[in-house]
Image 1 (cartoon, rainbow, N blue to C red):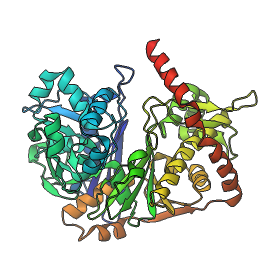
Image 2: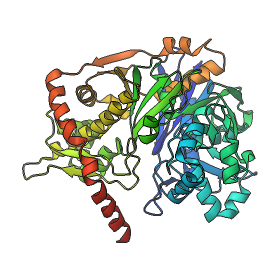
Image 3: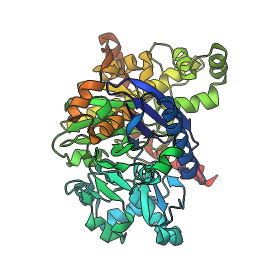
Image 4: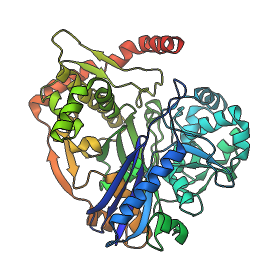
Length: 508
């Protein structure tokens, strides 16, 4: 038998089947494009995303006939929602987290309720990224869609619904809407009444690891799945990845090095203080019962290297094709191992934590005629890591110290990148036996919810193993500390200039 974890990300989706020891039996991946119909918008074609999800489920199901899938669960990006009518029609594209169309409604929420009160209810620092502001935008700009909406569904709930079951979400995804009370563990009456949103437009909400039902036979046949596959609630991608990385201690963190670079930390008591609020750190339920989590993140993340590949990396693309290699491995190799003389501010699509500045912009500083392409590539890799070090330093001030990083995602496949992060963070960085920890976390929840594991602890013990440990090198860390002291001054120094540049870009 096998367990299926489905990960629905910002630029692609993947499905991975595991056995009960955490070994990968089959996997499939599909990309889909981000759409930008207006400069500050970023959305997905939900019909295309669902077709891609169907494709990966079917591909993995057909590869696991000898180890048939018994249960599945979904981890997904947060915030992104789709309005669905009573006939199941998907009525609009999905605005994703760094879509900024609803900034005005964020200001309105601040005036009406205040960001301090919102933090106390939802555990989320107020931001345009959350579903609520975008639902209010839809309500004002497309009232005909809003009034026809039966349910607003995030991707986990949507997939469960498309699999033929009652649309159901879990605490971690619900918390990313800005409509969920994290202490009462239910939709917030105060927020829904303020915004005049009918609670019946929200899906059922239950803990991660809850059995929802089994896939109806006609749907299973269409997806090449066996009969009676159990569907279990999963969670937000980063808490699922944290579970799949086996993070259970408060001093251990997950770092997901993907399209968005994100560090997730767990703790037992909710943290809703001023440091969390001022720096954009959320606090919401974890996929593991009895725990909460926070996230430090940079929206640009690994997509900065992708940007370089697509715009400046033709030589490396051709080399990778000739040598049948991964293009990112070629790029990282071109970056070399020496510390870059450049400073890269990775704010190409707003900032993420701790600034939460949607008007910030990226920058490369220190260019000269001696600058090489390798300097730029290495500077890109270091810039994202230095931004995350800034976040770690603030988490420590909030009494959430991190002594170990467990790395997952596409960036975790690079030994050079992991060693660089150990040197910059001055902490040990661990790679795992499977880099697709988010899918593994979802599979763990599927197995637990279906009764194949007696507890989450048993599941972690059975499936999660360390692969390699990277320790900081003192001589490198000393230089990186000097670079960090310069780096942390860059955003404050050019903040106002970046805002003027963004304004100018909108006018041309």
